[in-house]
Image 1 (cartoon, rainbow, N blue to C red):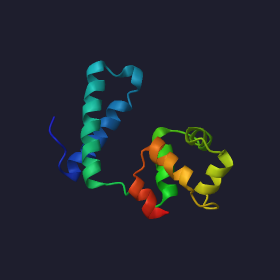
Image 2 (tube, rainbow, N blue to C red):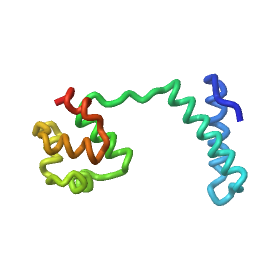
Image 3 (cartoon, rainbow, N blue to C red):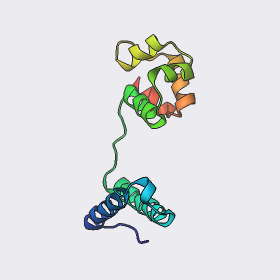
Image 4 (cartoon, one colour):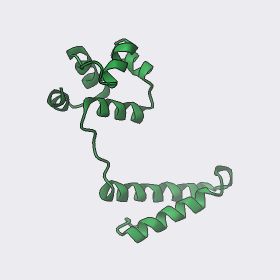
Length: 121
């Protein structure tokens, strides 16, 4: 399959995928599912190029993005970072400044760039 290069092709690809998926998962053949996957990858590549998602500009924003990407709750994140849920909640709500142990933990556990963390403190 060719790469999507125009907005018209992009819109058509979205319609094609929607049409196939509206059949329902149980009514799609393996070949159709593979075509949907391939088309979805093309759509994703086009979107990444033409509709970039801005990166968060705050520690709270990047931590919340990482939580969303990993589908984890505040309680699970607090456990991962080995900090209390109240402390994490206060940091995420701006009621408490991030401390060194928190910054170190999010750098190590969530792979957040250390330079980003230092610039935003």
